Every structure is written in C-alpha cells, then in structure tokens.
Image 1: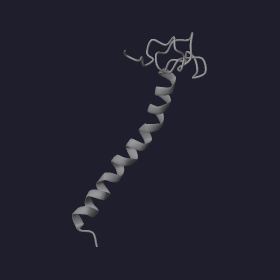
Image 2: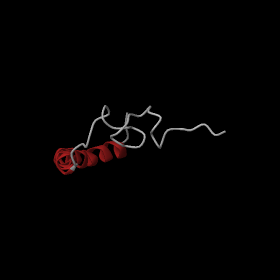
Image 3: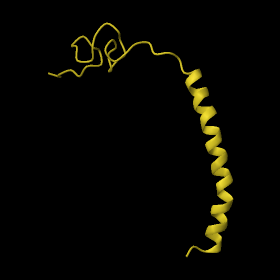
Image 4: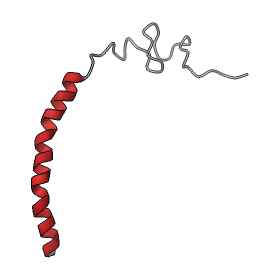
Amino acid sequence: MPSRRILLLTALSLPAAWAVGRLAGPLTAAAIAVRPPASGSSATRCAACGAADHAMLDARCPAAPRVLG
C-alpha cells in the first residue's frame, strides 16, 4: 500500500504532467516549421564530409581514413 506522501505527490504532479503534454504538440510543430529544408539525401551527399561531388566510400573524400606509411 503506498503511503499518503506518495499519493499526495502523485496527485499534485498529474496537472504538471498534463500541462507538459499539452505543450509538447505546439513545440513540436514549431520545431518542424523552423527547421531548414534538406539540401540533399544520403544518395547524393557524402556522409563523412557532406560534399555533393562524391559518395562516402569514394577515395576522393577528404574525410576518408588514410593509410600512414
């Protein structure tokens, strides 16, 4: 059986949880509206450096790991 303190804290936290839930929808919509559009896709951009002239596994990528020797 939960104590009176636990029941009281639960009862008092429910309105705060409800308010946070109500604010989550508009904040998510605002974040989507403010986000800039994508400038390419994973098929057209290098994932390592972001360049559009080569793919990730291309040897021309400046961010590709090199063999030291």
